[in-house]
Image (cartoon, one colour):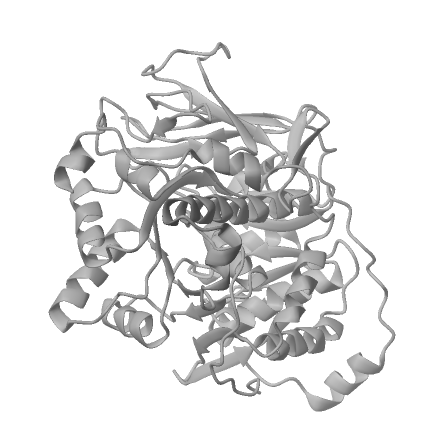
Amino acid sequence: MSDMLRDSTRPQEVVSPDAVLARVTGPGSPFEIGERDGLRQFVAAPPDLNLLIESARRYGDRTCVIDFDSAGVERRMSYDQVFAWRDELVPILHITRGDRVAIAMRNRAEWLVAFLAVMKAGGVAVLVNSRGSGPELLAMLEDVDPAVVLADSERAAAIRESGFKGRVLDLTRPFDAEELARRIAEPMPDPGVAKPTDPCAILFTSGTTGRVKGAVLSHRNVITGLMTTQMSGMVVLGNMAAQMGTTTEALIAQMPQQASLLVYPLFHISGLGSGFLSPFLGGGKVVIMRRWDAEEAARLIAAEQISMFSAVPTMLWDILHRARIEGTSLASLRNIGCGGQALPVNLVEEVHALCPHAQIGTGYGMTECSGAIAQAVGPEFMARPAAAGRRLSMVDVRIEGPDGEILPPARPARSSCAGRRSCPATGTAPRTPPPFSPPMAGCAPAMSGSSTTTTTSSSSTARRTWSFRAARTSTAPRSSACSARSPASPNAPPSACPTNALASASSRSSSLPTSTRPA
């Protein structure tokens, strides 16, 4: 194993991902790719994220979410219960198409229901960093001017104490019965179906180089990011099926309901997409940890038969160490993703030794691109564990010099990406977004030396690039892997955006018990 990882020139027995991708994205498939206005897109993609969400109703009494309330009591909810809760919340929002609704909560079931309700009502979900202080929360809210804030008790109190004068709903407390009845009785305007370019969500950047900025993602951005994640999962399944001498359909038919352990914050693009929406749309079970604890994570993996787990390297080290000490089984894990920083080769070896049947992967992405733009999973990742992965088929990437000229490999540069997943611009998220045009979103795949960045933007071309000191060893064509590390700084982190390496596009039902929705 060690020799294989350290000798990237050794041939690997990998079924061609290009051949599998061609089948998955071929004519008539759910992931068929066509071109419009000079950019590739999914032909079958719906215009409105809520249409995708509604398709998950078919999972009925399957277990949808497991979490812990404010008192630490475990809650289990089926898809039917989550949708009933969502439908009850919609009239309480009292919003119309395009209104902004801020969500300020720690990871919990109420967060998921709040997001689903905002999509149903035609609103724009503003995902506030719930770990911020009261003044920091207030600054983000003032930037976006929400019609209403959906919060838990802790954040609701902090927001009010900081001087926010707008409407705040604490979803962790029961609604007034009379108000609930009155709101339900009131006629609700039909939000209709969103246009693909309508704003869908606003996510805030990390603010490592200054004040945080809001990235406005359209419905097309978010849907394309989700379908790209699911498509990547189908490619991996196709590769696995080919190696096993069976079909993808036969392999899926034998799989139990997929279960994912959510440890990334939901206000992050990875938490929202790979952690929540992708498994939700695939009929999976989402298990939410209230806070990171390696012992509790190992217990949940064994008890809930978690099959998908994505985390930063420090969390992986933590849980591997705990599992060895306690003797806890991690055998249910089938997909292990890692991001947020460079993945040490010895950590890959440890993960493979403890979970030999798991597909291990990594990726690079960013908020402005609705998630990952490069991924490597399974044998392809094991052959190049120091790489950030292949460029995904729905984005284009180029390596530029200061004047925009395309540079050869291993030169300090800036990188830009374009596609249906990239938001037009970032900033204070004005209420009227700029007109849509093919966007170029800047990427910082490897920071080397100074972390100072300079930003330029043009609303007329919807172009935004980040200038920085960085290097890649490849221009990342689809047929090759792109390195996430600079030759001058081999330990530099590949990304500030952790991504889930694999999300199954399909899962089967489960007979796990459910409970009624909490008050």
